[in-house]
Length: 222
Ligand code: ZN
Image (cartoon, rainbow, N blue to C red; front, top):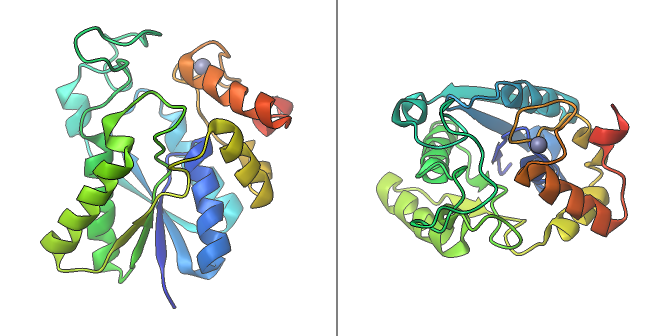
């Protein structure tokens, strides 16, 4: 049996990926991994555990406290507010946590190595998003190559959402039967439940559901 590991943040995209993996590999072959990287909004961790439990897969939470020690971004540093605009010098929003996806996938690959898992699934996408450079296909392909070399493994990184718009991601979630689980997900950059509705993450999520013509189960549940 080929086994798969989903990097699960508790958000809409990684939840869709979890159901993609279940559809492709079978629920008994899938588990999930979540990283406690010192995110200000602890509700993310609870959401990930709840989604995994709802989907019937195991969830392992691993601590990485170095990002919070580094600070300087809006997701881990209480002194940095989420800004709607990009930073003039970097061209990126201040919710960019440098290196985050690279580190997550590397630790996930290490876990996979130890548990004889050949497939990693991550919800990164290069369309319709904030332009995070670690979400680009080229970055993920280069990392996969580095991991294969560095661990002498045949690990494959799957990115089922890479070229989908938010609308298409919502439609994929519907087709995979992932919509009920969306009620337990968390997207808001301000960490609010019910979501604030005004931060960039809330706006992007709302746009996707609106364009797909589907009611967001998270909002329906409130
Ligand atoms: Zn929000």
